[in-house]
Amino acid sequence: VKLKDVKDHLKHARKVAQCLKSNGKVHLAASFFKECIQESKDVLDDDAITEIIKICNVIKNEKVQAAKRKVKGQAQKSKKKDKVAEKQAKKMAVELYGNNDQFDDYDDYGA
Image (cartoon, rainbow, N blue to C red; front, side, top):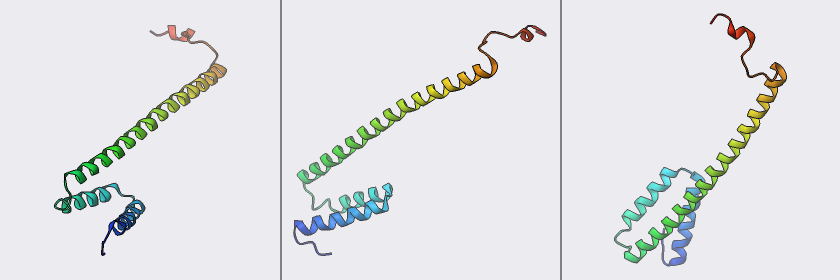
């Protein structure tokens, strides 16, 4: 692959990114980026590395926020479902066995 100008580099980067997305395996993508950065350390200067770190931190923060929102939303939904299911179960028990939570007469025998 001949990379002459910025356009060629960006075009190649997009093709590689599409391949990584279609593969969908995190560990392979992470290994690829680690190797690219390690092999490019002679070409990259301090400003370029700082820019890469900033981009990675922004992406990481977005992922963390999305995960927090997802977990928070799921926790609220599951609590509501549990309450509804619990209420239905109690209602069925009352219909079947009556609304008596006290001891029955036979509980006093044999103790």
